[in-house]
Image (cartoon, rainbow, N blue to C red):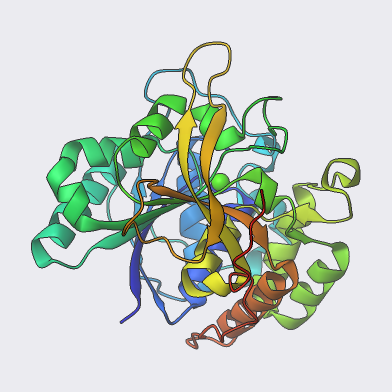
Length: 352
Ligand SMILES: [Ca+2]
């Protein structure tokens, strides 16, 4: 059985990449998806999540839950790619090839946080902790952790793996903050201060892994309908900014935390402690204390710094693995396994 993960997301085309990869990988057991307001409204995120599951796997049984329709305290702000909206709106000419989407298992208001809290309690009771992957604001995870209680969280959560934050890089939704952190800084702060292991993929790392038009052409050509839909939507979201990123292509931010779960050798991470500002002037700004030496493990053993930050990524390796996974989805029912790649994390070097 694969690593059990619960995904909290706000799809979003890069969330779509994360969901597709998780569904395709044999070493991941995706036990649920919570839709949360962020890039788009919660309802749009929920419909996009359900559509992605149906597109990837016929009769997909992964439960998609309705989550928070806004942050804990502040007003909702939308992502720069809000205009992408509902995936299906961009796919009208493919409509006859697209799957029907079932309503899903649970539409109760904020059932995502309740389902996540129950998953934490069950994992603690079974002694079989789960991993949370967060590719949107941390609203629902913070609520779930509060509902489940500290003891259950310590026993029931193996790791939290999230896309968010910016350190050396400028923010993307504000000059000082990345979108997920800016959206709900209070939730992010609660999660960072919980004492649970957290591995973060900030803009500094995610900006370096981009898909170019050539990559998208290959995906559309080699990965069947899934590939055609993904390439179409990625292009529609217009993610290029060569001046900012230092080269062509658009970042595929949310894919990285899911890839790290099965191919950590493609990343260089460093032990850290992350703080999130919640005051009105710098809400969502992330700062860090770093350990001198890079680390290839998220284990807390023997270290007082509870977090890891991805600092370097093997972009070619990630792109190749993503294409492999999309191709496996195109062959109905087949799931793939990530082979070992040349490790970035063997280079234990002093970067300071
Ligand atoms: Ca997202």
